[in-house]
Image 1 (cartoon, rainbow, N blue to C red):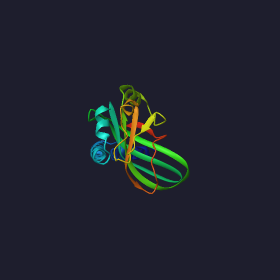
Image 2 (image 1 turned 180 degrees about the vertical axis):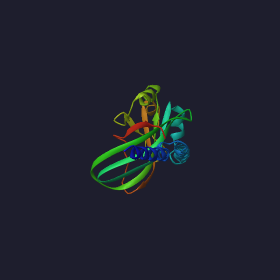
Image 3 (image 1 turned 90 degrees about the vertical axis):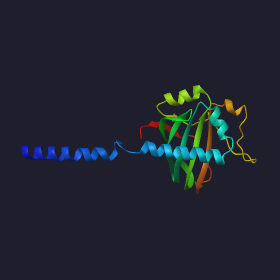
Image 4 (image 1 turned 30 degrees about the vertical axis):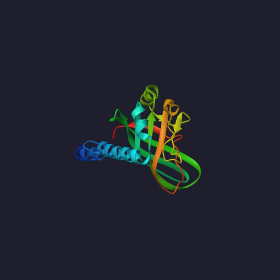
Length: 185
């Protein structure tokens, strides 16, 4: 009995470091990959969505989700990871997840940025254990002239969402009900 216990102990002790290294993130480049994707998404957004540079200058902070994948066949869902930037520096990492039910079929990928236009909105977002996009999010979309409909009344909205870079078979993208949670990549 004691030999069996010692054998189990030795096998467990030998396997533990290997198993622990599989998913604990030590020495992983996850945050670096997210940062690289965020920077690329910001560059793309500035080039393809006129008016977003002005939004970023006026925002207290912005959450950039560079790649969100959404798929559905009756039931659907989406997932992505990104970074919260304040004054151009990453301060936290977040995941975005949502689930849907209804008439849907297909898949798409897109990027989006949430601009927190007030310190109160940013503080509220950062202090929440999980924050869900709801009716308080205003969507800024390209107008027929090719620029965002941004004016002085838009700049006082607490949170402005810009969706860009859509590719796939599902038409449109909404952030309604998307839950954002702080992560440690």
